[in-house]
Every structure is written in C-alpha cells, then in structure tokens.
Length: 180
Ligand SMILES: [Zn+2]
Image 1 (cartoon, protein in one colour):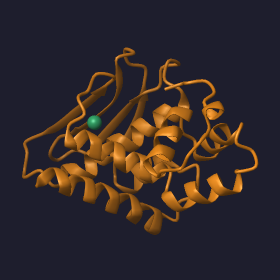
Image 2 (cartoon, protein in one colour):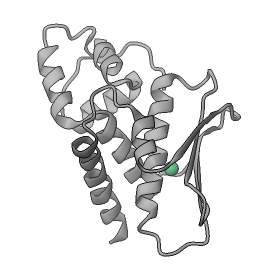
Image 3 (cartoon, protein in one colour):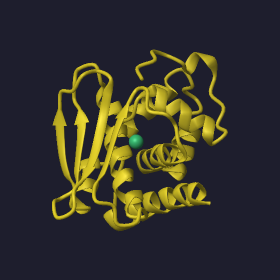
C-alpha cells in the first residue's frame, strides 16, 4: 500500500531530520530546506494559496510559501514543512518529467497530503518534547496551548491537533484564539 508507506516515510524523514540536523525548537525550517538543496521563496500569493512545490529535472527544487499577512508565521512554517515533505516523498515517484504540487485551503486530503501534514507536525512538534512541556506546564493549563505553540513556533490550532493526536487532554479553556 503506497499510502501507508507515505506515512511511514514521512515519520522516518522527520526523525532523521531531528537526528542529523541537531534541530532545536522552534525548528528552523529554512535550514532543513537548505540542507536538502531546496530553494525557498516567500511570496505574497492570493489568499487561497498556502504554498507550492516544484521540481523540474535539472533545476533545484523550489518551495514557495505565501507570506501574506493573512497567513500567520506559525502557519507559514507549517506550510514550509509540508512542502519540504512533498520534496522528500516525491522521491518515491518514478522518474516524472516534472513534479508540481500547489497547496490551498481546499486541497483535498489524499494520503499523500496527509503524510505531508504528518511530516510537518512531527518536524515542528516532536512527540518527546510535546509530552515533556505538556507535563511541565500542567500547573498552568490556562496558558499551556499559548506557551507551547509559541515555543514550537506553530499556530495554536496546529498545537491542539498535535495534542489530540497524542491523546493529551487539554481543558476547554486552553482554547484561546483560533488563528489557523
Ligand atoms: Zn501538499
């Protein structure tokens, strides 16, 4: 099942990035892109677009992220990590003439797209650190989501999704402002 492999690969790539690049939170996504030889651009696109990935044979891979003020920094970082995953997972696709993905608010969540989100979540919010900080901040549940999303450099929305994934219960008053 190719789709299952995508998820496994996404997880493995994220772990490998942490090990080989000596990453620290908030993860420097541009450093990860650079190490992979990706040219990273920030552009103001129409609001529907979050980012894109383009690979033309013979040219460096390109990731472009929408840096419009409508896209908060945490979201831009998640999009950058998502597009990096398109590069990593694209290497499984056999000799294409060209690879192009454009991610928008309406991009359907295929297995590949979900694997790219998985990579982004694990790269930006590795499980051991999420659990550690969640525990450490247990005396401060009102501000826990805000503090953790700030430390990881992600949106509160992405932080809550990650906590749910890991089965970490947060109270309703952790909710705060929904940015993403
Ligand atoms: Zn995508």
